[in-house]
Image (tube, rainbow, N blue to C red; front, side, top):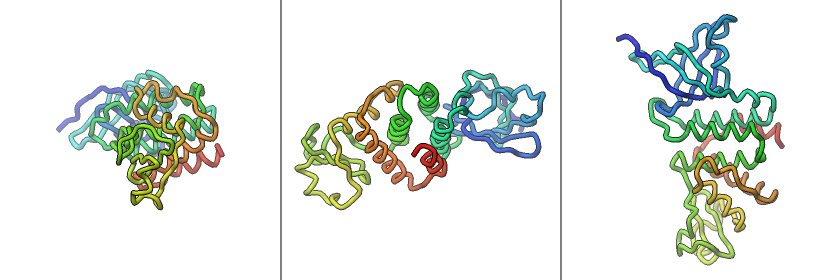
Length: 255
């Protein structure tokens, strides 16, 4: 069977050289998740698509899809290029970490509701630098957990359902909250738990329950922000059961 041409928007989240002049591109799309597309002769000087297929470019792609669900790029029209990220090693390394997370957790040929927009907003925030990198990283990790169906239950205590308490504990393994009265009666005392200050709990709730375009629009003190970063990273990586080399690289640069 001959291939068919399809048109869709996507962000390039990975690329690998193949041969002397071509590349494999990993493209995050709304319709088909992360797909791999071959960009033939893309490294040649006269390539018409060279400017639209760099890393973290948001573009409109015309793709040839064959009967084995393999893709090749027919044309690419740039919508927005996050080229400023390459001028800041820290921002670029954090974007690479986000991209590796998405590639690892996104299935091919499955619709990824809202993930493309979420990633585009996140790259834009990294480029703008209105919020700190620590805040962006934490909010991305927690919101991605929600998108993946791994969202913790942050509404109330899992036992008595109280919304506020002088002591709130977060059991990362279970993804549940326990008030101080109930926590000591559970089996989570010696497990991976965190005490949440009111500001920290409020920030986590804001990230999970706000509209995606608002999740980076909050402020948190330095101490709480450090704790938030530790919690969101530990929570996501625990449930994914994997370490990411891009995260280790980011930490070497940032810390």
